[in-house]
Length: 538
Image 1: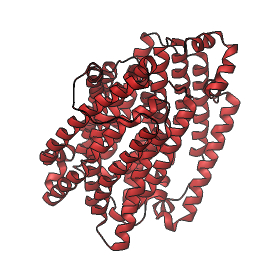
Image 2 (image 1 turned 60 degrees about the vertical axis):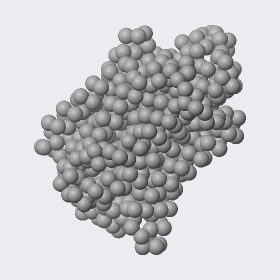
Image 3 (image 1 turned 45 degrees about the vertical axis):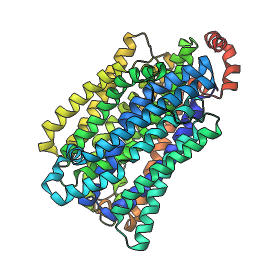
């Protein structure tokens, strides 16, 4: 199998995710200006979220957890042809299942919309429009699930770029749809809905072409439950449940929020902001780490697998902790600068900002879960992540239902953060019992990161140049002073954290030493006997 550096793979995925999220913010700024945070925005959130909910459930969650380790081991042990044969068999069963599921979902769409946004029933016109538009967007699931299969093949063979950049096309298409609607005077909401359906096909074609170019192309065949397919399905059922608990969190939160007008939109915009570091850091590391761990464990390199896990956690903490502090302290100004214009009012800014403050403390936990999951999945353990995720779901539902009548949508965001930490703690305890130990570099690095993040937070909190309430409530386009204030404080926060990190050792040498390119790493490994033996096994 093609060797690759985790840091390079994660950097490639993270850079693509960053580009996608920047375009996504531009898209959301345009959506906020066109639709605001009222009924039309709520309808778009539901119609867009439904296919994405099942995509994350079936494709990105269960499928990746089951397919990547099996594909990687097949390629490592039996070669490319055997891996392609397995992929073709899985494709046949996956496509057949998707077509049947999509037809059923289209027929029963009113029930799905009711499950996701039961509060819409109080306004029949709103509910009917959400059903109609959800039927248009739902086939997006087929394209994105097939894309996940092809992306998994590319990632497991050490090719990350194309699959990572595919989501950029979604935002390009949706931005184009909004621009076209503005130029022609067409309905912005309808243009966005059709844009989602078109974007799914465009993204899939891009990754399909990359697979053909990589010599991994596969054809269609009759669905059969072969040994390889059964193995993927066996792993996929617990993986489906593991992925499902996270989506149940989303489902419960959206459904409860639908009872409060505008709440679904406020949570959506807050979610978009904390998803930026989650995608750039957590998902990027998870995507790169899973095939690396599968390859190392296949070669019997337990030492190398533990080192990969520890360094990935260290990098995750290095970025997630300061991001969480910054998002919490700067939530209001960030919301105002990014979204407050057009139909998005100062009241919307305040409501979405408070939700972001509730999401922010959970960011390190969300990223930590993403980084720990590959340790389970690479060992073909998809059951325990489900059990620990279910613990978080129970907590999320209980907290949301208990406190929503009192605190509204903020209770949903806080419940999500608490659920994330409970899941992370449970997964960590399991790994510790199983024999994993954080090494000295991870422990000392974590302490240094905590100190540096706290120092940065104290400096931002005690800043004497806080913006006035009137400045924060102005539209960003009319408040250059707020934009300047936010930029200065973001830069100052980064400088303080970086300087403190360099002095305290938060940027540990072990991180960059371990994650250098394969050729360089092999030369450095000569000074490390255990790493040398691991390289011989490979």
